[in-house]
Length: 417
Image (cartoon, rainbow, N blue to C red):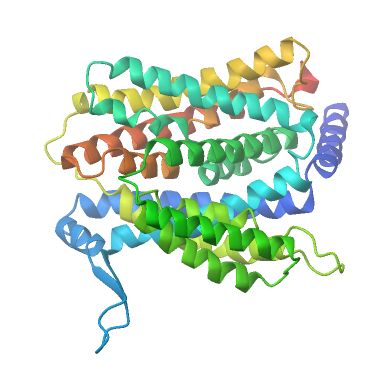
């Protein structure tokens, strides 16, 4: 009876903690991301199964289905023609919508969320930075002698928020609410870092004309925000024009999604609904249950024919896997541990060091963003690079997810230590 009473008391304390730490917006976010993580996993597994079955060629043909947008086709000629295979449309346009949602989340968290104050932001910010630097260093050390392979140094620096949140939500009360908030904040800042990396290091030859037009679009978005325009559709139309200019400029088109999101108003001065939160709430199901699963299905398929386990020990996949599993755990946990020990930040409320380390290991699940950066890093090179990237990302993400889940499932809560 006494043991049951203690369990009831501990459960009540957990519920009180969750109510005090997790806001309604974050609660909805966790629910969406946990389901999305499961569907992402199913899409990736399905792609792997099909690409290694008699339908492998059909899978490849599916990713190459042509699609085009043509404007002004007539006596006056074609004013605009975009002709791309399905895979490119998914990676350039659909993922721009994903990055648009990421931009909305980043703005909300920094304006009115868990990252609004320096005290709240410092721990996940430093942890995210460590979680980007250490994996990149490990990857670079393993691939130091190969100039082409070094182009992928940023691949293991990313965290897949849907998969990571999906695992902690499946573990339920074994993961304190404070750690769920910490993981979400780290992943959001990690996404911001990935956006900067893509902008600085993964661009093609630049078109100054298109960059100038993109700058005009940004100016237009800023003026709309300054004038207090609350209609989201106006921002989206200008954002689509910005996407087109960025696409033609040589900078990766997905960055237009983030840039547009940052100009969406957070608050309505007349007391109406927040345009940003309305868009975020409306887009989440589409991104979680259509765009990201489609990205996973179109990008995760890799033929394992002729590959042996030794292929995982080649420098490129080994560097990615080691960066995700070891680099993320050491980078996120190590930098956070130093910050906490110096007194600059506090350990997440109600979390033991073992639980904290388990969540840091989960940061090594880099699936979506790692595949995306890998595609940019080796675009136009030998297809073998794509295969090795997928092997490294899939094996590293799987191992990080399994290890993190095992550590969290076995860890005792802080109260019992």
